[in-house]
Image (cartoon, rainbow, N blue to C red; front, side):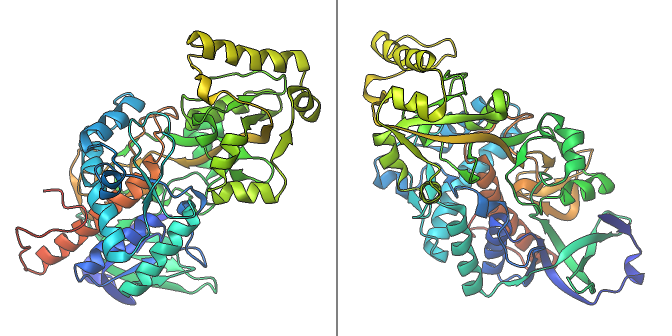
Length: 484
């Protein structure tokens, strides 16, 4: 991955377009929809034969505050409350201007996608993810990232957006003023195309699939299972280093402590928030399961054999039935059912006395109202009752959260804090809002940045191109991600 410095006058491209987007995940597609709506001619380059990205491997939940979906459900929420939740979880380590921008624009972009592009969003009801003080997760009906990607791809096709697949971008061409002139991409047959552009948006996610960068920045996760897209090779980070861009929070990542193993299916953290617990092979709990699923990955990996069992009951099982990922786990017979603690002990090969003590301790805490030694409290109405359900899970690395530092318009900044002339970034390619480690990840932070900043960056690109063409923007213009 190279940045090639060239003389603009001596550079020839096979063809040119006003805007190029690298990456056709949720971030790239939302940015393309925003720019296309403003009349910008563009192309999205995707290295895979079919656009999937990290979005398709997620639950597809996008947090947004103050939406009409919340209002219809009687949920009171605001951008200010959402900002407070995000910053509390990350220890106030994220850029406050970026956090505020994402929260303030989240409702408008969700509603714009629903109204203008028929993304069938609905509000997730019934539980709060750790750190969220209001129900603000928006998803498509099947509650999968794959379905969200399908809806975005349909919207892109309807909008007439060109997506070139199997296009692996290798090099960027830049002049002496740090202006991106274009790029080169390879296709499977070895052919190389040189494409010029006036604005470039990097929506190519982070570096989770790059073992060298993981060892460099996240050595504690170098042996963890990577449950992310293999195409996340850190292209934005590598190009950014060569461009002299500011890179921040490269030690930040999202882990997950509830990946069914087998069959490597994500099991919703709703299990824990509805009253479930995690047990190690000794039949003992080892953490506060309400602390957050990202930091839970390392805790699960620290257990004997590096796995744990999610333990829950019929009530939670019935709730999980609405999640397609859970249905997939049922089909593979990964979910096990036991009529009693004794059967649970025999079926999972756990000591009966230790397992019974774990159950008894939870009941005693529910009666007393006291917190356990990890800080978790239990409620009588969510105590587990037989029959018991269990599924084996492990901890995994999902995606990195550090990257190119950007401003509130999605413009990439150099080491001095100055915006590069025509380079934008959003989603996993950019610095996220999860702080510097794994404990600052608030559920949905990844797709929040991808979808909302994607929309904002698309509008920024259209404004830059319109200004360059000498056409003034209407001062009352509205649309996704308006930040002024």
